[in-house]
Image (cartoon, rainbow, N blue to C red; front, side, top):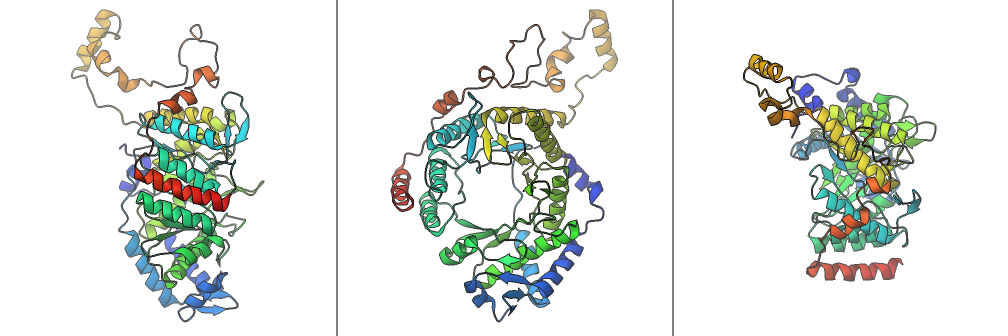
Amino acid sequence: MLESTMMQAADAGICAPNLGSFCAEDVWEDAQRILEEVGIEILSEAAATRVRGTLAVKDGRAHFPREVLDHYFEELRSKFRQVPPEPYPFLTLEVSSWHNCFRDPRTGETRPWTTPALKAHAKALRQVGRTDDRLYVHTPGYPQDVSPELAPLEAQYLEFLYSQKPELKMVQGVAAHRHRIEMARIMGLHHQFAAQTPSPLKFGGHTVDIVLELFEPGMSVLIDTMPCVGISAPGDWRAAWALDVAENVGAYIIFRLCGIPDVWTQFRLFAPNMQTSLVYFTSPKALSALMMRSKVRQFFGLKETRRSELNLVVSKAPDQQAAAEKMAGCMMGAIWGFDVIEGAGALYLDEVFSWEQFWIDLEIRDYVASMLQPVAPRTIADTVEAVREGVEGGTFLDTDATLSSYQDFTWHPRRFDIGTRQGWSGHALLEPCRLPDLDDLARAYDYELRDERREALERVMAAAREELG
């Protein structure tokens, strides 16, 4: 794996130059005061009943004594130190699983996913991934030709059928979770709930209710609060992070007091576009938030996260703005050490998947990776003799040094046209004739789950379709 600039800087004891005033220890001190003095509103009566006696619950808000905070702070740090780093190759692009639309590369029309279209894209993307070890592919969305309750399960079913290393996708509702739990058991996967507690400072909502109703020993919970600076968190970096830490640690403690041993937190804070109140992942300030997150995670003992969402852009089409945003996000992520960049092919955050944008994103990734490739070691033993050889021959093109090492200083794009104008075909990059055919790649992908697990999954899906329509 290539060493990134950020990792080299960290080894040298250098901090990101714009974060000198940000101190995670100060954030934790403020977060403790928030949990003591402001507390967390508990929307779940089941949770409120279980925490009384350990936490003071007044007017529906739980307040956290310092001794409780100290105990669970040490527990968090002890647990997190045992988490190994994520082993991904440098600058891996991740295809998001959240899209609900796709852009048809033949017509340019953006349409809701149908199950056949989603299946074709899932297979084609995995066929590309067979020869690209820096591409991390999910089933790229949820079909919209079934009920909203069933759509995540249909996507999960496709994930199990066509991925050799399938992962669990998020679902909504108690009934859908019951089916997903059964599917996870069939596939031998660990079941983790995603608990998205609302900001500011609330514990409850349907995801929490689902956890408290369906949790069984051996399952885990991932807390994912998502406050936005200036909207659902204060308009100040330190205060916003204090709120985020208070929400994460507070939710962790409440879940632990509810009898759930395996609980994890993410610590995520977002910089919004204040014109639209949408998260703006490729904003220059989003990188600042990611760097602060790294310091918070390190303070709590978490191994450095190598993931970012820096390719989730606000562009709506594969155009000039998308290219600029994607290059900026990929470049920022690479320079500061985020090996996994989410959003390959994504447009308008992760709402639309574009086959055209996907190939541009791979080209951008390869460009950035090539630029950051370490300089090749010396291959010429005698510089003077090498120069003499070229001078006498009138060129260095056919010298041994050039013929043996020209790949060290040459970049070979896959899609970009770097030939002469006279040799140009006249076709623009995004014309279908210039891009690999999606249907051809889908047909070439020959993996499909066919053992006894397939029959069991079919039974679960038949029941789910009957129940959820």
